[in-house]
Length: 114
Image 1 (spheres, rainbow, N blue to C red):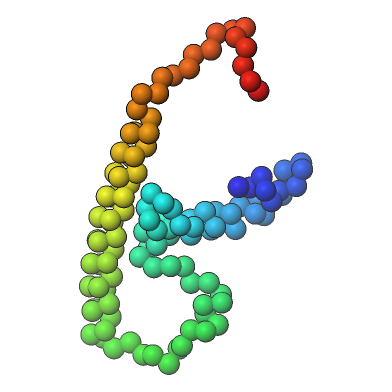
Image 2: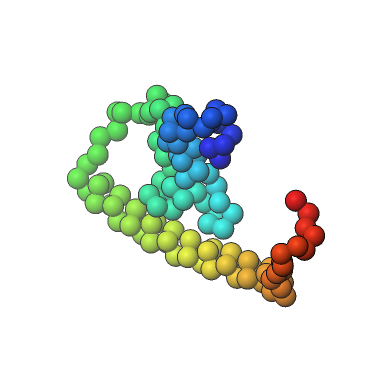
């Protein structure tokens, strides 16, 4: 993806790497049926625009924090199980797709399309 943004001499790739990696980790994946960011952290990323509309009036009570942590743990556990199932399903689909294919071996001098 970096090739889409860097200049012709590829000297400014480091300026785009954080943005491209953020886009990569927050994009939806068919195999996971979610984004890797959500699967890892159990939430979507908080962007500056989200902070602009965030309500700061809500105060946490001590019992709400414990309850939130329990719900988060259960949610992350369920998410991990779902991700494992989806990855196994994607691996099985990929293996099924590759069934019956043979490896093409080329010898020196064989005509090939470039």
